[in-house]
Length: 160
Image 1 (cartoon, rainbow, N blue to C red):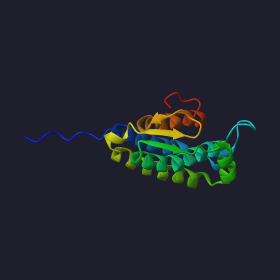
Image 2: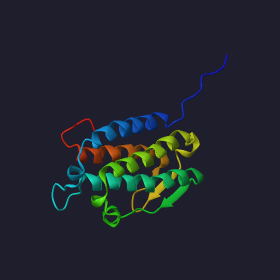
Image 3: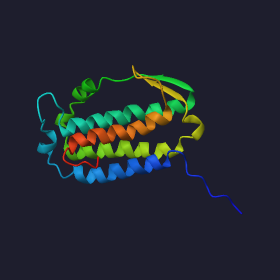
Image 4: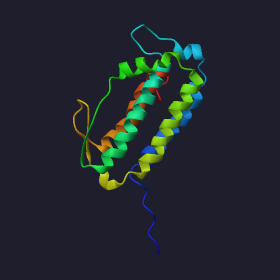
């Protein structure tokens, strides 16, 4: 009798992230380009800038998640999120195009997460000035980070 196949350690996290991305895409596309580009105040990001930041986060975390599998200790640079958002000028981006870019890079991460072997999850990753943490912590924190910023985009909805 064959033993049942074990689910990869981050398969559930990948499923949750995928569900969040697909459900959020529908809601994001309900905003007009003007609504998405409007800042709530001069010092706060617009929805476009928040989604751009989440795109930058995906683009920075993907190589971290790969490289942290190769080393038991990896030091990776952080990044100045305000500079990145300003340098990319997300506030000027077409909203529908930005949503698709964000969706695509995150679905790329969704496919990576279940491929990370269990033995690599305890590898230590130091990102910028952050305290050392395991690869597993950073992978789970990636979802929490998304949920935090989606609360800024959809502030009246408590399910993010």
